[in-house]
Length: 327
Ligand SMILES: [Zn+2]
Image 1: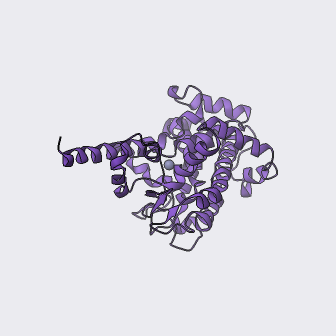
Image 2: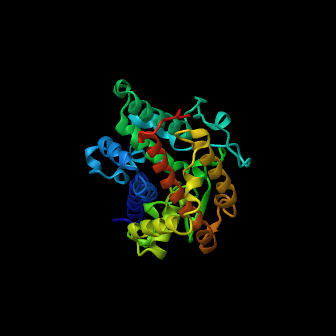
Image 3: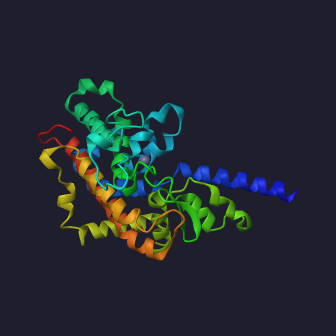
């Protein structure tokens, strides 16, 4: 085989691997959020969730929490893509529902906060009035809500419009060129040199990877948890009962007795995006230990907050205590 043909095959193989990897970006993060949430479910929530889960979940919500990412590129689900994030005006570092929650065609409510309100309302109305159940697919509503509460806690899912939440900013992660918003399985494959190291440089031109969705978690798993996600989840759960125990009631609470309150979560995220994600990460920067070590505590806390708030929201939806409006 000629060397140019070999190089061409190499590029195609890298591209295929990266696309496959991109389908499951953020899986660890969403699994963690939902696993933490499960341990805070009230009895009624455990029963309601079990009843709604698809058979494939085998009774475990965490196993289907990445489902909305897996389907969003299929043509019949493409309408769900804008529901994973909300863009805010460049450099303002704040979020406003009426100003920001729309898709690119300016359809109001079509963003991650709007989706959280919508799926909460669907689950609420169905649990209050059995006649409405027929109008909604509550299994999908549960999986979307669980996923989107995870997404909204990832700071760059509430990022600047101009760079599509960090998607168009290309940086290098420990000397591998990648993309600020996602870092995914591709990184693992590249780092472990699963594919041939002599053409690894071709990955430099691929814009699909994102740092905050996956890379920081992947690096933490390797550095501190012997590549074991259950070990990382255990460590976060221990933090929740120790260092963060005083904060948990505040994280759980919802203003004005609402069932879901995603707006403050979005405000926190854009704030963190400005303070930590965008800072010292201009295009072309190499992010290494300084960035990883100072940002990891933010990622860990957001995963824990996402879990606590998902559980609190589902407990409010499925609890038999008196209910309040969803938004
Ligand atoms: Zn998502």
